Image 1 (cartoon, rainbow, N blue to C red):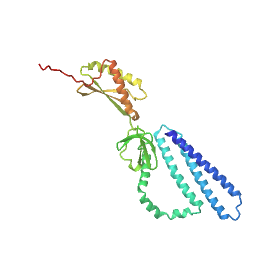
Image 2: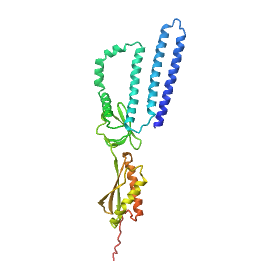
Image 3: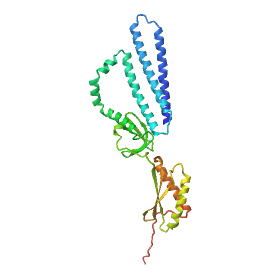
Image 4: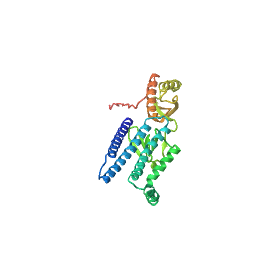
Length: 299
């Protein structure tokens, strides 16, 4: 997906640059040709070409800047958030520059409009209250470092990785690739699960007839071997917490291991797998529900 976005940005830059070159060439041609008795048409053509050159130039510059900002992939989540915000901001800056420069080229006195736009801005401000709230909330989120691009967060029951932070919205992608776009003003009660180390858990059931004193004496060495096999996933040696439950078909033993939040589910699967194999090597089989059928003679 990221590679596809980069290709689209490159294609957009090439198109904008091509339009810019063609527009400049046409402007040069129209400048050297003497259009006799067509002064007004020549002026209209020049104005149109100025607009095309300006718009193409601004869009090309904006696309190039956004593309350059997308090239680095810093490990620091804070840096990635700042790059994401700046990329989002560039689109709005380009729109404002095109609007102001376009009005200036058309001969409109922009300073007069700005001076007399107070009442209009007040009306628009009330109508765009949610937009302003999104922008202000996004700014406070960035300054307060509540979450960053790459953090794993949970909001309203939706759990995923922050893939993009914009001026107005935040995008969160879950493990299935589904993207949820939330207005910044709606990002409330966010649970940032990347702030601290998480714990993956595992519960292994063993038969009641197991020699627990012998098994518990062999567990530390088993846990050391499991950690040595997965140092990239596990932050420390797994811990045996003790007997969790006395279930119907066996005794439930509880284990936990510290992992990064992104590995919380993979850590549980790995711990289940290695503990099952390890217990089998120690001669301990995991029980399963069984039904005894007794056939009582009728005579």
